[in-house]
Length: 104
Image (cartoon, rainbow, N blue to C red; front, side, top):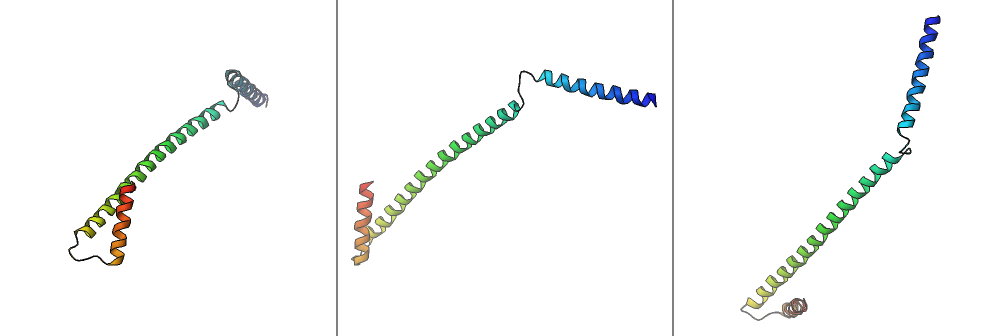
């Protein structure tokens, strides 16, 4: 029985000594520093991803505006190219397209 007690006593001493050594090794870093650093890195990554998304969004918006302008030009070109006289709604659309394209 005495041998078993010694093993338990030695095991408990070694585990407490390891715990105190681990605490002394981390004395320069309080608990949670690594977690805070990891969180900061994630925040930076999210910020970078957000800025990339905003950049892509603005490029996409500019592209859509150009496509809309080209579509209006093509429609106006078709209206101007008609040989027969334009109906009232076509004439109104033509005037609207001209003013829209000239204002940009």
